[in-house]
Image 1 (cartoon, rainbow, N blue to C red):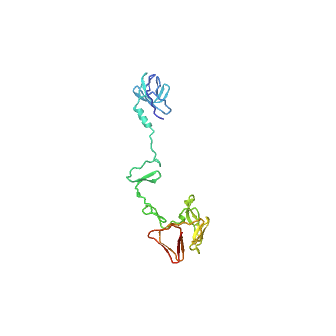
Image 2: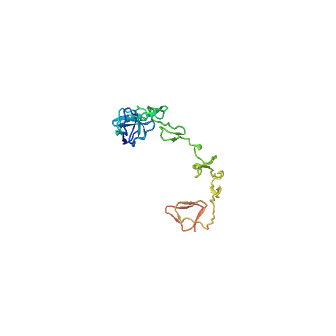
Image 3: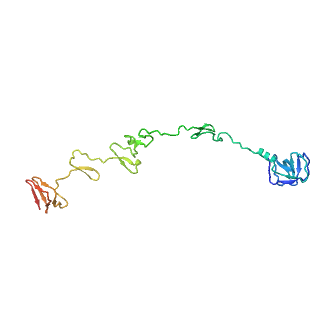
Length: 270
């Protein structure tokens, strides 16, 4: 049900009507709106505004006219007060819902406040009473002061805190192994042979195992076929008593140095 409009709708009466008429016939209905069962519009006959409730062909059904009108009087759809008043009343005025989820931000509030839950669909302005977060200091194995840099406490890093690829056993050492989990692994130490009774010996290996060997300081043979020595003596030297010494000539003793031949000793230069 609604009031109807149209543009440039105009015609004339096909025949005269008397006062109190509830219908009238026009020459043409061209341009006039189509009215549904509960629709209506307003037309002006000459100067009288009449409410039309139905249009069937060229017959208009209307509320009772207040006066008589003659054939050929103008019938027009004009913008009248009655038309506008009914249009305003017929408007579907929107009413915003007030249920939860449809409420607006509440009035009031002040700088620094925030919206806080009050009830379902309702928020209220509230003061922010704790705007500064202070992170607690770390304690235990890792500590911090005033939420600053973290520090590992002394004497806290143990085997359990290291990422090692194996369990290990007593006597092993920690070795870097690229590719192993954590890059560290416990490994066996290549142990030295027993030192007991091996004073003065040197350590040697056969490429598989290490062993102690005696340094032959009395060796008087060579597989090379010859011995070499310097031909210049640049340090003081004393031939031990009862020992002999042999040098290949020529021999030069640097200035400031000497060779002492002890009693019972001989130095032969060949």
